[in-house]
Each structure stands twice: as structure tokens, then as C-alpha cells.
Amino acid sequence: MKSSHLLDLLIRDYTFQSYRHKPFKTGRINPVHLPPANFTGITVDAARFRCGSLRRYGATVAEFRVPPGPTLQRCSKRLMLIRQNLGPNWSKVYYDDYELSGYALVSPVLGLLAYNAGDNDDDDNNNNNNNNSTDDNNNPRVPFEIGITRTGHEEPITVDFTDTAVIGRPPSRGTVPLCASFGRDGEVAVAGMASRDDRRRVCVAGGTGHFGLVVEAPTMPWKGGYDHDEKKKVVSRGKMVVGGSFGVALGAFLMGLLVVAVMVKAKNKARMAEELVRKAYEEEALQVSMAGLHTAP
Image 1: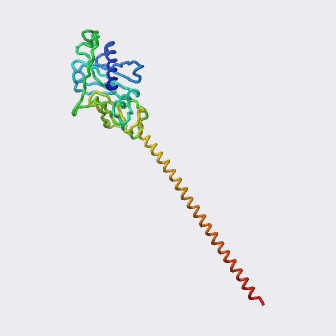
Image 2: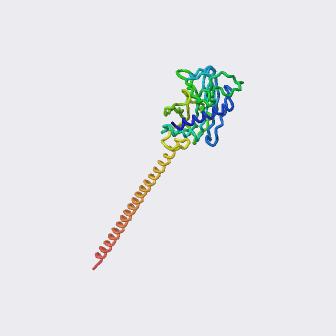
Image 3: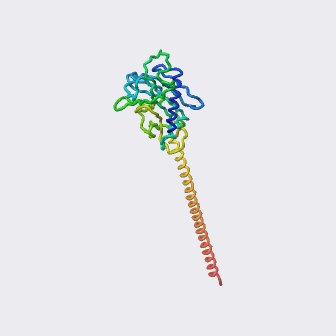
């Protein structure tokens, strides 16, 4: 069993334990306090709904919006919606459990799961804390998961990441995060944003599950997010260094050739000047010699 699924079961058990200790008002969102030593960084909210009311009116729980008319699987009377924000630490579980090569998480993983929450029709003023949550031996019943889906051209379930904290380095300007949906089969589905407003980051969900924002990135160990453009900058700086070194070497080589050419030219010029002086000296000596022969007796 994957550690991500075990984490869901632990959060479920703590939520229902909190509910048995203090029953939730129907339709009201309640924070669930987890042991801080074990679940640091995780925030959980839960709300109890009648199945019929959820079908008619839908619900909004934190970042998740379930529009009216969802398909509820195995929902008889009531259900419990549990919303999870796994924070920067526990979101790593999904990086380890799922094939995320080529992508990096830049948001916490958000989850919305639904469980059976009793089949009786007690009202909110009933002080009976049992709520069919225990068996004949007064042992807690294990809540089973209820699937919530939207299909076809119906208004979809949405997850709004606009106000969600960014993990690690924020995406560089111009980089648009993608929506990642983590399936129970171990597969990750990646799709574009549903919102046309650049200031909002809204993803479409086909049903309950876990979701996050990712950006394209090379395969690398988890570091709580990754700025893909930063590597491009590093590579570009490397190219600049190599290019600069090559340019300096080429310049030095050309300068050397120029110096050699100047020296050769100067040497040739000096040699020509020396040759002219020598010729002039020889001509002058010849004239003196001829003059001496002409005046001799």
C-alpha cells in the first residue's frame, strides 16, 4: 500500500475520532486538529452533509467547489467531506509515490475525499453521539469512501490555487503552472489551467482526489519546487564563459599575428634601409676611386 494512501487513512481516522468526540453541525466547516508531532504542516477541514442536499445545492470547502448535481456513489444518508492541505513537507509523499519525472511541484498537494457518515436521520439538535458510527459491540465502524464525480458537459468540480502558498522558488515570470491530478492507479494527469484570468489559478477536477500545481523541470531530487528558467540562466552563463574564453584566446592569437607582422615589416624595412645605405656608400667610394684615378699623373 502506498504511503500516500496510508496518509489518507490516518487523516480519515483522526477526523472521525474528532467527530465522535464533538459531532459537527451539518453543512458547517470544522477544522480538524492533528497531532503536531506527526503531521506538522498539514491542515484539515471537514464538513458533514446530507447526500440529497449536496446533490441539490453543491458545496464549497476551502479551495474546492462542488457544483450542484454531482454523482454520489454509495451515498445513502450523510457523508463527510474531508479537505486536506499537505503543506510543503508531506507533499513530498506524492513526489515519491508517483512518476513526476520531468515535473516539479510548486504548490502543496490539496485533497478532497468523501466518506460515509451515518445512515440515520437525526437532526442537528440530537445529542446522540453514536450516529450509527459504532457497531453492536460499540466499536467504531470503518467509514467507507464515497466517490463524487462530474461527467460530460456538466459544470466541473474546481480547485482554486490562487491563494495557495508556493513551495520553494516561485515560477519565473511568464511560466504558467500546470494542473496535476494524482490518481489511485499511480498515474498523474497533467492539464492546463481552467481559468482564463492570469491572476487566478483554477484547476478542473473530474471528482474527488488529490491535486497540485507543477512546472516542467528536468529530472532532479525533490527540493520543494524548481525554477526551470534558473537552469537556463545557469546554462547561458556557462555558454557565455566558454564563449568569452574562446574570444579572448582568438583575440590573443590575432594580436600575436599582428605583432609578428609588424616586427617582420619593421625588420624588412630596416634591411631595405641598410641596403640603401650600403649602396650609397659603395657608389660614393666608387666615385672617389674614379676621381683619384683621373687626377693621377
